[in-house]
Image: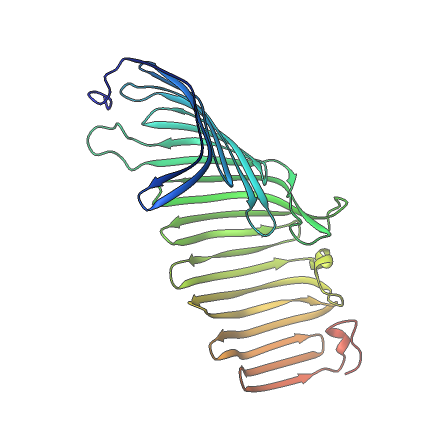
Amino acid sequence: DPFAGLVPLPLDIRFPRVAIEDATLQFDDTSLDVQSLVLAGSLVNKHLQIRQLQVVSTPIQVDLQAEFDLIANLPLDGRLSWAYTGPITQDFEDASGDLHFSGNLNTLRINHQLNSPLEMTSDGELLLHLLSEGVAPTPSFELRHNIVPQVLAANSVSSNEQIRIESAEISTLGDFNIIDFSGNARLAVQNAQGRNLAPSVELSWATTIQGQQLSISQASVTSNTGSVLASGLLQWADPLQLSMQLDIQENDGSQYQPFLPEGIVLGALNGSAQLELLQNNDQLEGSLSIASLTGELNHYPLLIDGDLRYGADGLEIDELNAQSGTTQLSVDGTWADAIDFNWKLDANDLSTLSPLLQGS
């Protein structure tokens, strides 16, 4: 019994209401300004009831109601409501949620309802093993998250476009050292009137978070006509690094015309590329190796391959070749403080690049 000898139970203590205003709580080297703290509850025999614990510390407000039995495994049940008022990101502000928890010091069951900035329910278990005999297993968790159909509150794309989540299911499980993060979602980009500007797409991912790195076993964006597949590794330690293999297969790119520049009409696209990024202090380095990209541009055959590298010495282009219809472009060289390019353009008909162009 973890309470044996600590508290002379049973007791009969009642505190109908204790209120503190405009206080500062000190925790070692950290202080917290509290505008309001209200506590009401009782400890009768071995039953602790917190009828209200409200803490207001701008921009956060927390309200807790809970019950505990002060016996060996500490059975408990409670609800916690929270709210954050203020900007979260550039597009979102304010957040709130409601949490219900029950169980004991070995297994804690939780159910959480996120109310804003989006609506999402989460439920699952935390395996704490705090009362296990001998060497306790590592604490672990398994949570399932579900996002109901909704339009994101912010103008997520532009002032005239918005993202609608049609469905989303997410799973997180692990032992706090290694976390598997996977899921799938269906999204659409709509105009202000709620009409889809392009077909809905399916997102799917299976990743693992360990320490300061994210391993991407697979991530995909698929539609009725094609897909983009990705796999690789992201490390956010110093330096920040990203290594990603990309594969695209699209049979009809014209359906995404609302997002393309004027004068660019895509047909089919197929290809693969390797992307590498390195952020060291304020210096960004990267490379894009296009093994092959074939398809159709403005109703003419398209072929692109070559390598691009960027770093402290500027942009380096290594044998970049592009062909659209009868138009051919070859580029090799560097673009930095001094420009040193070898290039060749053979364009008998510039309209193969864009219907807005004419001549040769």
